[in-house]
Amino acid sequence: MLHDRIATDDLFEALQEELEHSRRRYADLYDFAPVGYVSLDEESRIEEINITGAKLLGGTPRKLIGRSFLDFIIPAQVELFTTHLRRSRRFRHKRSLDVRLVTQEGTGVDVQLFTMATHELDRQTLQFRVAILNITSRRRAEAAVRRQREDAQLFLNEASAVLSASLDWEITMWSLARAAIPHLADACVVDIFRNGGPVRRVAVAHLDPEKERLLWSLEKFSSQVQVYEDSLMWVPLVVRGQTIGSIGLKLERLNRRYDLFDLALAEDLADRAAIALDNAKLYSKEQEASRLKDEFLAVVSHELRTPLTPILGAIYKLRVSRPDDEDLQKSLDMIERNARAQARIVEDLLDISRITTGKFEFHREQCNLLSIVRGSIDLVEPTVKTLGLNLKTSLEEPERPVWCDGDRMQQVIWNLLSNAFKFTPRGGAVEVRLESAAHSARVSITDTGAGICKEFLPYVFDRFRQSGNFATRAQGGLGLGLSIVKYIVEQHGGTVRAMSGGEGQGSTFTVDLPYS
Image (tube, rainbow, N blue to C red; front, top):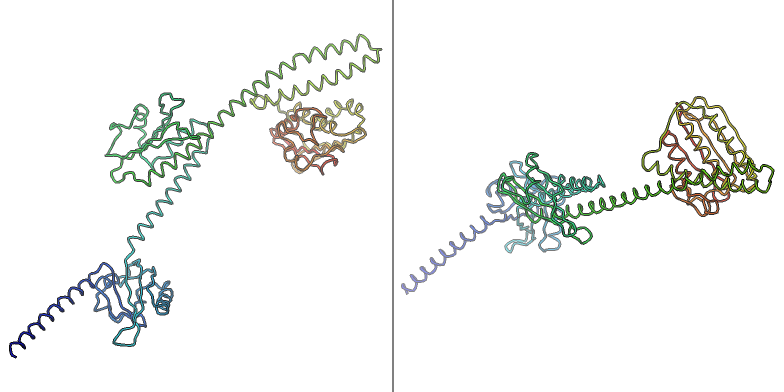
Protein backbone atom coordinates (compact mmCIF):
# COMPACT_ATOMS: atom_id res chain seq x y z
CA MET A 1 0.00 0.00 0.00
CA LEU A 2 2.70 2.40 1.01
CA HIS A 3 4.65 1.55 -2.10
CA ASP A 4 1.64 2.29 -4.31
CA ARG A 5 1.08 5.66 -2.62
CA ILE A 6 4.68 6.69 -3.11
CA ALA A 7 4.46 5.73 -6.80
CA THR A 8 1.28 7.77 -7.18
CA ASP A 9 2.88 10.82 -5.53
CA ASP A 10 5.89 10.55 -7.83
CA LEU A 11 3.64 10.33 -10.88
CA PHE A 12 1.63 13.34 -9.71
CA GLU A 13 4.78 15.40 -9.18
CA ALA A 14 6.05 14.43 -12.63
CA LEU A 15 2.77 15.45 -14.21
CA GLN A 16 2.80 18.73 -12.28
CA GLU A 17 6.33 19.45 -13.41
CA GLU A 18 5.47 18.63 -17.03
CA LEU A 19 2.38 20.81 -16.82
CA GLU A 20 4.39 23.70 -15.39
CA HIS A 21 7.02 23.24 -18.07
CA SER A 22 4.30 23.25 -20.75
CA ARG A 23 2.70 26.33 -19.18
CA ARG A 24 6.02 28.20 -19.21
CA ARG A 25 6.65 27.12 -22.80
CA TYR A 26 3.27 28.33 -24.00
CA ALA A 27 3.61 31.47 -21.88
CA ASP A 28 6.89 32.21 -23.66
CA LEU A 29 5.27 31.51 -27.02
CA TYR A 30 2.41 33.84 -26.07
CA ASP A 31 4.54 36.63 -24.60
CA PHE A 32 7.24 36.64 -27.25
CA ALA A 33 5.11 35.90 -30.31
CA PRO A 34 5.85 38.19 -33.30
CA VAL A 35 2.21 39.32 -33.09
CA GLY A 36 0.74 41.24 -30.17
CA TYR A 37 -2.18 39.67 -28.31
CA VAL A 38 -4.59 41.53 -26.05
CA SER A 39 -7.85 40.56 -24.34
CA LEU A 40 -10.41 43.33 -23.78
CA ASP A 41 -13.53 43.39 -21.65
CA GLU A 42 -16.85 44.77 -22.85
CA GLU A 43 -15.70 48.32 -21.95
CA SER A 44 -12.53 47.94 -24.06
CA ARG A 45 -10.32 47.70 -20.96
CA ILE A 46 -7.18 45.58 -21.20
CA GLU A 47 -7.53 42.36 -19.21
CA GLU A 48 -4.51 40.57 -20.60
CA ILE A 49 -1.71 41.48 -23.01
CA ASN A 50 1.49 39.78 -24.12
CA ILE A 51 4.92 41.39 -24.09
CA THR A 52 4.88 42.03 -27.87
CA GLY A 53 1.54 43.82 -27.61
CA ALA A 54 2.75 45.80 -24.60
CA LYS A 55 5.83 46.94 -26.51
CA LEU A 56 3.60 48.12 -29.37
CA LEU A 57 1.75 50.29 -26.85
CA GLY A 58 4.97 51.47 -25.25
CA GLY A 59 4.59 49.86 -21.83
CA THR A 60 4.72 46.61 -19.83
CA PRO A 61 1.88 44.11 -19.36
CA ARG A 62 1.63 44.84 -15.63
CA LYS A 63 1.23 48.60 -16.16
CA LEU A 64 -1.21 48.25 -19.06
CA ILE A 65 -3.70 45.89 -17.38
CA GLY A 66 -6.88 47.86 -16.66
CA ARG A 67 -6.10 50.65 -19.15
CA SER A 68 -8.63 51.40 -21.87
CA PHE A 69 -7.44 50.26 -25.29
CA LEU A 70 -9.22 53.32 -26.71
CA ASP A 71 -6.52 55.49 -25.12
CA PHE A 72 -4.05 54.13 -27.64
CA ILE A 73 -6.12 54.71 -30.78
CA ILE A 74 -5.89 58.06 -32.54
CA PRO A 75 -9.02 60.16 -31.81
CA ALA A 76 -10.13 60.18 -35.44
CA GLN A 77 -10.45 56.36 -35.42
CA VAL A 78 -11.99 55.73 -31.98
CA GLU A 79 -15.53 55.60 -33.39
CA LEU A 80 -14.32 53.31 -36.16
CA PHE A 81 -12.81 50.92 -33.58
CA THR A 82 -15.92 50.85 -31.36
CA THR A 83 -18.01 50.04 -34.44
CA HIS A 84 -15.54 47.26 -35.21
CA LEU A 85 -16.03 45.77 -31.71
CA ARG A 86 -19.80 46.11 -31.98
CA ARG A 87 -19.85 44.17 -35.24
CA SER A 88 -17.48 41.52 -33.82
CA ARG A 89 -19.86 41.03 -30.91
CA ARG A 90 -22.90 40.81 -33.19
CA PHE A 91 -21.60 38.49 -35.88
CA ARG A 92 -19.20 36.41 -33.72
CA HIS A 93 -16.60 35.80 -36.37
CA LYS A 94 -13.10 37.16 -36.82
CA ARG A 95 -12.98 40.69 -38.21
CA SER A 96 -10.03 42.84 -39.23
CA LEU A 97 -9.41 46.58 -39.09
CA ASP A 98 -6.46 48.84 -39.93
CA VAL A 99 -5.90 51.60 -37.37
CA ARG A 100 -3.14 53.84 -36.13
CA LEU A 101 -2.06 53.45 -32.51
CA VAL A 102 -0.29 56.06 -30.42
CA THR A 103 2.17 54.71 -27.84
CA GLN A 104 2.60 56.15 -24.37
CA GLU A 105 5.60 58.07 -25.75
CA GLY A 106 3.42 59.56 -28.50
CA THR A 107 4.88 57.52 -31.36
CA GLY A 108 2.49 56.49 -34.13
CA VAL A 109 2.25 52.81 -35.10
CA ASP A 110 0.20 51.45 -38.00
CA VAL A 111 -1.40 48.12 -37.06
CA GLN A 112 -3.89 45.61 -38.39
CA LEU A 113 -6.28 44.22 -35.75
CA PHE A 114 -7.90 40.77 -35.92
CA THR A 115 -10.75 40.56 -33.40
CA MET A 116 -12.90 37.68 -32.14
CA ALA A 117 -15.66 38.08 -29.52
CA THR A 118 -15.92 35.12 -27.07
CA HIS A 119 -17.58 34.19 -23.76
CA GLU A 120 -15.36 32.95 -20.95
CA LEU A 121 -16.39 29.47 -19.74
CA ASP A 122 -16.10 30.36 -16.06
CA ARG A 123 -18.14 33.55 -16.36
CA GLN A 124 -20.92 35.02 -18.42
CA THR A 125 -19.02 38.13 -19.49
CA LEU A 126 -17.95 38.88 -23.06
CA GLN A 127 -14.30 39.18 -23.97
CA PHE A 128 -12.65 40.47 -27.14
CA ARG A 129 -9.48 38.69 -28.14
CA VAL A 130 -7.43 40.87 -30.44
CA ALA A 131 -4.30 40.03 -32.43
CA ILE A 132 -2.19 43.11 -33.25
CA LEU A 133 -0.01 42.97 -36.36
CA ASN A 134 2.49 45.80 -36.80
CA ILE A 135 2.16 46.95 -40.43
CA THR A 136 4.22 50.14 -40.14
CA SER A 137 7.00 48.70 -42.30
CA ARG A 138 4.46 47.47 -44.83
CA ARG A 139 2.82 50.89 -44.94
CA ARG A 140 6.19 52.53 -45.42
CA ALA A 141 6.97 50.11 -48.22
CA GLU A 142 3.58 50.78 -49.83
CA ALA A 143 4.14 54.53 -49.50
CA ALA A 144 7.59 54.12 -51.05
CA VAL A 145 6.10 52.17 -53.96
CA ARG A 146 3.43 54.85 -54.41
CA ARG A 147 6.06 57.58 -54.39
CA GLN A 148 8.14 55.58 -56.85
CA ARG A 149 5.16 55.21 -59.18
CA GLU A 150 4.22 58.88 -58.80
CA ASP A 151 7.81 59.93 -59.48
CA ALA A 152 7.90 57.60 -62.48
CA GLN A 153 4.65 59.02 -63.86
CA LEU A 154 5.89 62.57 -63.30
CA PHE A 155 9.14 61.66 -65.06
CA LEU A 156 7.28 60.15 -68.02
CA ASN A 157 4.93 63.15 -68.24
CA GLU A 158 7.87 65.55 -68.25
CA ALA A 159 9.71 63.38 -70.77
CA SER A 160 6.65 63.35 -73.05
CA ALA A 161 6.41 67.14 -72.84
CA VAL A 162 10.10 67.49 -73.70
CA LEU A 163 9.89 64.98 -76.55
CA SER A 164 6.84 66.66 -78.07
CA ALA A 165 8.27 70.17 -77.75
CA SER A 166 9.89 69.98 -81.18
CA LEU A 167 9.15 68.22 -84.45
CA ASP A 168 12.77 68.48 -85.50
CA TRP A 169 14.19 64.94 -85.66
CA GLU A 170 17.67 65.78 -84.31
CA ILE A 171 16.31 67.94 -81.49
CA THR A 172 13.96 65.10 -80.52
CA MET A 173 16.93 62.71 -80.29
CA TRP A 174 18.83 65.14 -78.09
CA SER A 175 15.74 65.69 -75.94
CA LEU A 176 15.43 61.92 -75.48
CA ALA A 177 18.98 61.62 -74.14
CA ARG A 178 18.56 64.60 -71.82
CA ALA A 179 15.17 63.38 -70.55
CA ALA A 180 16.73 60.27 -68.98
CA ILE A 181 19.18 62.31 -66.87
CA PRO A 182 19.26 62.15 -63.84
CA HIS A 183 16.02 60.34 -62.92
CA LEU A 184 16.71 57.15 -64.85
CA ALA A 185 20.42 57.27 -65.58
CA ASP A 186 23.72 59.05 -65.02
CA ALA A 187 24.63 58.55 -68.68
CA CYS A 188 22.52 57.97 -71.78
CA VAL A 189 23.30 57.35 -75.45
CA VAL A 190 20.93 57.04 -78.40
CA ASP A 191 22.06 54.91 -81.35
CA ILE A 192 20.24 54.65 -84.67
CA PHE A 193 20.62 52.20 -87.53
CA ARG A 194 18.71 52.55 -90.79
CA ASN A 195 18.07 50.13 -93.63
CA GLY A 196 20.58 47.60 -92.35
CA GLY A 197 23.36 50.20 -92.30
CA PRO A 198 25.96 50.80 -89.59
CA VAL A 199 24.99 51.95 -86.12
CA ARG A 200 25.21 55.71 -85.76
CA ARG A 201 25.29 57.51 -82.42
CA VAL A 202 22.98 60.51 -82.64
CA ALA A 203 22.71 61.81 -79.07
CA VAL A 204 24.49 61.54 -75.71
CA ALA A 205 23.98 62.97 -72.24
CA HIS A 206 25.87 62.66 -68.96
CA LEU A 207 25.58 64.15 -65.51
CA ASP A 208 29.17 65.31 -65.99
CA PRO A 209 29.38 67.35 -69.23
CA GLU A 210 33.11 66.60 -69.44
CA LYS A 211 32.33 62.94 -70.07
CA GLU A 212 29.87 63.53 -72.93
CA ARG A 213 32.64 63.80 -75.53
CA LEU A 214 33.85 60.33 -74.50
CA LEU A 215 30.37 58.91 -75.03
CA TRP A 216 30.42 60.20 -78.61
CA SER A 217 33.60 58.30 -79.40
CA LEU A 218 32.89 55.00 -77.63
CA GLU A 219 30.91 52.22 -79.30
CA LYS A 220 29.95 50.84 -75.91
CA PHE A 221 30.02 52.16 -72.40
CA SER A 222 33.59 51.82 -71.19
CA SER A 223 35.48 51.88 -67.93
CA GLN A 224 36.88 55.24 -69.04
CA VAL A 225 33.58 56.83 -68.08
CA GLN A 226 32.91 54.57 -65.10
CA VAL A 227 33.14 56.16 -61.69
CA TYR A 228 31.84 53.26 -59.60
CA GLU A 229 30.57 49.76 -60.28
CA ASP A 230 27.69 50.46 -62.58
CA SER A 231 24.41 49.09 -63.87
CA LEU A 232 23.46 49.05 -67.57
CA MET A 233 20.29 48.77 -69.65
CA TRP A 234 19.77 48.70 -73.41
CA VAL A 235 16.23 49.32 -74.62
CA PRO A 236 15.16 49.09 -78.30
CA LEU A 237 13.48 51.93 -80.17
CA VAL A 238 10.65 50.40 -82.19
CA VAL A 239 8.75 52.48 -84.75
CA ARG A 240 5.80 50.88 -86.57
CA GLY A 241 7.04 47.40 -85.70
CA GLN A 242 10.58 48.07 -86.91
CA THR A 243 13.57 48.47 -84.58
CA ILE A 244 15.38 51.62 -85.64
CA GLY A 245 17.84 51.95 -82.77
CA SER A 246 18.37 51.70 -79.05
CA ILE A 247 18.72 53.71 -75.87
CA GLY A 248 21.68 52.90 -73.62
CA LEU A 249 21.28 53.81 -69.94
CA LYS A 250 23.96 53.62 -67.27
CA LEU A 251 24.07 54.14 -63.50
CA GLU A 252 27.34 55.08 -61.83
CA ARG A 253 26.08 55.52 -58.26
CA LEU A 254 27.10 53.15 -55.46
CA ASN A 255 23.71 53.22 -53.75
CA ARG A 256 21.57 52.22 -56.70
CA ARG A 257 21.27 49.48 -59.29
CA TYR A 258 18.66 48.84 -61.94
CA ASP A 259 15.70 46.57 -61.22
CA LEU A 260 12.63 45.38 -63.14
CA PHE A 261 10.76 48.57 -62.29
CA ASP A 262 13.53 50.63 -63.93
CA LEU A 263 13.43 48.36 -66.98
CA ALA A 264 9.66 48.87 -67.33
CA LEU A 265 10.16 52.62 -66.95
CA ALA A 266 12.89 52.64 -69.61
CA GLU A 267 10.68 50.65 -72.00
CA ASP A 268 7.85 53.13 -71.46
CA LEU A 269 10.24 56.01 -72.19
CA ALA A 270 11.41 54.22 -75.34
CA ASP A 271 7.81 53.76 -76.52
CA ARG A 272 7.09 57.46 -76.05
CA ALA A 273 10.34 58.38 -77.74
CA ALA A 274 9.50 56.14 -80.69
CA ILE A 275 6.18 57.94 -81.15
CA ALA A 276 7.91 61.34 -80.95
CA LEU A 277 10.56 60.25 -83.45
CA ASP A 278 7.93 58.91 -85.82
CA ASN A 279 6.04 62.21 -85.61
CA ALA A 280 9.26 64.15 -86.23
CA LYS A 281 10.07 61.96 -89.23
CA LEU A 282 6.59 62.39 -90.70
CA TYR A 283 6.77 66.14 -90.11
CA SER A 284 10.16 66.29 -91.83
CA LYS A 285 8.77 64.45 -94.85
CA GLU A 286 5.75 66.74 -94.92
CA GLN A 287 7.97 69.82 -94.74
CA GLU A 288 10.10 68.55 -97.60
CA ALA A 289 7.02 67.78 -99.69
CA SER A 290 5.64 71.24 -98.92
CA ARG A 291 8.94 72.86 -99.91
CA LEU A 292 9.01 71.01 -103.22
CA LYS A 293 5.38 71.96 -103.84
CA ASP A 294 6.10 75.64 -103.16
CA GLU A 295 9.11 75.57 -105.47
CA PHE A 296 7.01 73.95 -108.19
CA LEU A 297 4.24 76.51 -107.63
CA ALA A 298 6.69 79.39 -108.01
CA VAL A 299 8.16 77.97 -111.23
CA VAL A 300 4.72 77.27 -112.75
CA SER A 301 3.48 80.74 -111.82
CA HIS A 302 6.42 82.43 -113.51
CA GLU A 303 6.00 80.25 -116.58
CA LEU A 304 2.29 81.10 -116.79
CA ARG A 305 2.86 84.82 -116.37
CA THR A 306 5.48 85.04 -119.10
CA PRO A 307 3.10 84.70 -122.13
CA LEU A 308 0.40 86.96 -120.64
CA THR A 309 2.40 90.17 -121.06
CA PRO A 310 2.76 89.88 -124.87
CA ILE A 311 -0.90 88.80 -125.15
CA LEU A 312 -2.07 92.00 -123.43
CA GLY A 313 0.38 94.00 -125.54
CA ALA A 314 -1.01 92.49 -128.75
CA ILE A 315 -4.57 93.33 -127.65
CA TYR A 316 -3.59 96.98 -127.23
CA LYS A 317 -2.03 97.10 -130.71
CA LEU A 318 -5.12 95.58 -132.32
CA ARG A 319 -7.36 98.12 -130.56
CA VAL A 320 -5.30 101.02 -131.88
CA SER A 321 -4.99 99.64 -135.41
CA ARG A 322 -8.75 99.09 -135.96
CA PRO A 323 -10.67 101.34 -133.56
CA ASP A 324 -13.84 101.39 -135.72
CA ASP A 325 -14.32 97.62 -135.94
CA GLU A 326 -17.02 97.08 -133.29
CA ASP A 327 -17.03 93.27 -133.50
CA LEU A 328 -13.27 93.20 -133.14
CA GLN A 329 -13.41 95.52 -130.12
CA LYS A 330 -15.95 93.23 -128.41
CA SER A 331 -13.76 90.22 -129.07
CA LEU A 332 -10.74 92.09 -127.76
CA ASP A 333 -12.70 93.07 -124.62
CA MET A 334 -13.46 89.42 -123.99
CA ILE A 335 -9.86 88.35 -124.61
CA GLU A 336 -8.47 91.11 -122.40
CA ARG A 337 -10.93 90.38 -119.60
CA ASN A 338 -9.96 86.72 -119.52
CA ALA A 339 -6.26 87.48 -119.89
CA ARG A 340 -6.38 89.86 -116.92
CA ALA A 341 -8.34 87.28 -114.89
CA GLN A 342 -5.65 84.74 -115.72
CA ALA A 343 -2.99 87.28 -114.75
CA ARG A 344 -4.75 87.82 -111.41
CA ILE A 345 -4.75 84.09 -110.71
CA VAL A 346 -1.06 83.87 -111.56
CA GLU A 347 -0.32 86.87 -109.33
CA ASP A 348 -2.20 85.20 -106.47
CA LEU A 349 -0.11 82.06 -106.95
CA LEU A 350 3.05 84.15 -106.85
CA ASP A 351 1.87 85.91 -103.69
CA ILE A 352 1.20 82.56 -102.01
CA SER A 353 4.67 81.43 -103.03
CA ARG A 354 6.16 84.62 -101.55
CA ILE A 355 4.19 84.14 -98.32
CA THR A 356 5.29 80.52 -97.83
CA THR A 357 8.94 81.36 -98.57
CA GLY A 358 8.96 84.52 -96.44
CA LYS A 359 9.60 86.80 -99.42
CA PHE A 360 6.35 88.76 -99.29
CA GLU A 361 7.59 92.33 -98.86
CA PHE A 362 5.97 95.38 -97.29
CA HIS A 363 6.94 99.04 -97.64
CA ARG A 364 5.09 100.81 -94.86
CA GLU A 365 4.47 104.54 -94.50
CA GLN A 366 1.76 106.83 -93.17
CA CYS A 367 -1.17 106.54 -95.56
CA ASN A 368 -4.56 108.16 -96.00
CA LEU A 369 -6.92 105.19 -96.10
CA LEU A 370 -9.65 107.27 -97.76
CA SER A 371 -7.40 107.82 -100.79
CA ILE A 372 -6.57 104.10 -100.95
CA VAL A 373 -10.25 103.09 -100.87
CA ARG A 374 -11.22 105.66 -103.50
CA GLY A 375 -8.35 104.51 -105.73
CA SER A 376 -9.56 100.91 -105.46
CA ILE A 377 -13.12 101.94 -106.34
CA ASP A 378 -11.90 103.86 -109.39
CA LEU A 379 -10.12 100.72 -110.62
CA VAL A 380 -13.26 98.58 -110.49
CA GLU A 381 -15.87 101.05 -111.79
CA PRO A 382 -15.60 99.80 -115.39
CA THR A 383 -16.18 96.25 -114.14
CA VAL A 384 -19.23 97.38 -112.15
CA LYS A 385 -20.84 98.79 -115.29
CA THR A 386 -20.03 95.69 -117.32
CA LEU A 387 -21.57 93.37 -114.68
CA GLY A 388 -24.67 95.53 -114.24
CA LEU A 389 -24.16 96.02 -110.50
CA ASN A 390 -25.10 98.92 -108.24
CA LEU A 391 -22.06 100.20 -106.31
CA LYS A 392 -22.78 102.31 -103.22
CA THR A 393 -20.24 104.12 -101.09
CA SER A 394 -20.25 105.72 -97.65
CA LEU A 395 -16.77 107.06 -97.02
CA GLU A 396 -15.66 109.06 -93.97
CA GLU A 397 -12.24 110.53 -93.44
CA PRO A 398 -10.54 108.44 -90.68
CA GLU A 399 -9.50 110.31 -87.56
CA ARG A 400 -5.83 109.57 -88.16
CA PRO A 401 -3.64 108.07 -90.86
CA VAL A 402 -2.66 104.40 -90.80
CA TRP A 403 0.84 102.97 -91.02
CA CYS A 404 0.71 100.58 -93.94
CA ASP A 405 1.89 99.56 -97.39
CA GLY A 406 -0.50 101.53 -99.61
CA ASP A 407 -0.18 99.19 -102.58
CA ARG A 408 -0.83 96.09 -100.44
CA MET A 409 -3.86 97.69 -98.79
CA GLN A 410 -5.22 98.61 -102.22
CA GLN A 411 -4.72 94.93 -103.13
CA VAL A 412 -6.82 93.99 -100.06
CA ILE A 413 -9.68 96.34 -101.03
CA TRP A 414 -9.52 95.28 -104.67
CA ASN A 415 -9.60 91.57 -103.74
CA LEU A 416 -12.61 92.03 -101.45
CA LEU A 417 -14.46 94.07 -104.10
CA SER A 418 -13.65 91.50 -106.80
CA ASN A 419 -14.91 88.78 -104.48
CA ALA A 420 -18.18 90.67 -103.92
CA PHE A 421 -18.65 91.23 -107.65
CA LYS A 422 -17.96 87.56 -108.39
CA PHE A 423 -20.83 86.30 -106.23
CA THR A 424 -23.39 89.07 -106.76
CA PRO A 425 -25.82 88.55 -109.66
CA ARG A 426 -26.64 91.26 -112.22
CA GLY A 427 -28.83 93.93 -110.67
CA GLY A 428 -27.43 93.27 -107.19
CA ALA A 429 -25.74 95.83 -104.96
CA VAL A 430 -22.31 96.18 -103.38
CA GLU A 431 -21.68 98.77 -100.68
CA VAL A 432 -18.30 100.08 -99.50
CA ARG A 433 -18.12 101.81 -96.12
CA LEU A 434 -15.16 103.58 -94.50
CA GLU A 435 -15.52 104.77 -90.91
CA SER A 436 -13.62 105.27 -87.66
CA ALA A 437 -13.79 102.67 -84.89
CA ALA A 438 -12.44 102.99 -81.33
CA HIS A 439 -8.74 102.54 -82.14
CA SER A 440 -8.79 101.76 -85.82
CA ALA A 441 -10.06 102.63 -89.25
CA ARG A 442 -12.72 100.24 -90.52
CA VAL A 443 -13.51 99.23 -94.09
CA SER A 444 -16.65 97.15 -94.73
CA ILE A 445 -17.73 95.67 -98.05
CA THR A 446 -21.27 94.30 -98.16
CA ASP A 447 -22.95 92.52 -101.06
CA THR A 448 -26.39 91.11 -101.79
CA GLY A 449 -24.95 88.03 -103.45
CA ALA A 450 -24.81 84.29 -102.84
CA GLY A 451 -23.89 84.49 -99.17
CA ILE A 452 -21.82 81.99 -97.20
CA CYS A 453 -23.24 78.83 -95.64
CA LYS A 454 -22.62 78.56 -91.89
CA GLU A 455 -20.63 75.32 -92.28
CA PHE A 456 -18.08 77.01 -94.54
CA LEU A 457 -17.89 80.38 -92.76
CA PRO A 458 -15.11 79.36 -90.29
CA TYR A 459 -12.91 78.28 -93.23
CA VAL A 460 -13.56 81.15 -95.62
CA PHE A 461 -10.01 82.56 -95.21
CA ASP A 462 -8.25 79.18 -95.51
CA ARG A 463 -5.92 78.72 -98.45
CA PHE A 464 -7.28 76.66 -101.36
CA ARG A 465 -10.64 76.22 -99.58
CA GLN A 466 -13.78 76.52 -101.71
CA SER A 467 -17.43 75.96 -100.90
CA GLY A 468 -19.85 74.46 -103.36
CA ASN A 469 -22.27 77.29 -102.66
CA PHE A 470 -19.76 80.06 -102.09
CA ALA A 471 -16.65 79.60 -104.19
CA THR A 472 -17.62 77.16 -106.90
CA ARG A 473 -15.78 76.51 -110.12
CA ALA A 474 -18.54 78.39 -111.90
CA GLN A 475 -17.15 81.61 -110.43
CA GLY A 476 -13.56 80.57 -111.12
CA GLY A 477 -10.52 81.25 -108.95
CA LEU A 478 -8.37 79.03 -106.78
CA GLY A 479 -9.57 80.10 -103.35
CA LEU A 480 -6.43 82.15 -102.69
CA GLY A 481 -7.61 85.76 -102.67
CA LEU A 482 -9.15 85.81 -99.19
CA SER A 483 -6.20 83.98 -97.61
CA ILE A 484 -3.89 86.64 -99.10
CA VAL A 485 -6.20 89.36 -97.74
CA LYS A 486 -6.02 87.85 -94.26
CA TYR A 487 -2.23 87.58 -94.38
CA ILE A 488 -1.74 91.20 -95.49
CA VAL A 489 -4.17 92.60 -92.92
CA GLU A 490 -2.68 90.60 -90.04
CA GLN A 491 0.84 91.63 -91.02
CA HIS A 492 -0.35 95.21 -90.51
CA GLY A 493 -1.61 94.36 -87.02
CA GLY A 494 -5.23 94.43 -88.17
CA THR A 495 -8.09 91.97 -88.35
CA VAL A 496 -10.49 90.82 -91.05
CA ARG A 497 -13.72 88.93 -90.50
CA ALA A 498 -16.58 87.61 -92.61
CA MET A 499 -20.27 87.63 -91.74
CA SER A 500 -23.25 86.16 -93.56
CA GLY A 501 -26.81 85.19 -92.77
CA GLY A 502 -26.40 82.07 -94.89
CA GLU A 503 -26.95 81.05 -98.48
CA GLY A 504 -28.65 83.74 -100.54
CA GLN A 505 -28.30 86.29 -97.70
CA GLY A 506 -25.26 88.16 -99.00
CA SER A 507 -22.10 88.73 -96.99
CA THR A 508 -20.03 91.42 -95.29
CA PHE A 509 -16.25 91.51 -95.00
CA THR A 510 -14.84 93.94 -92.43
CA VAL A 511 -11.23 95.08 -92.13
CA ASP A 512 -9.95 96.93 -89.04
CA LEU A 513 -6.56 98.64 -89.31
CA PRO A 514 -4.95 100.26 -86.24
CA TYR A 515 -4.09 103.93 -86.41
CA SER A 516 -0.45 104.96 -86.59
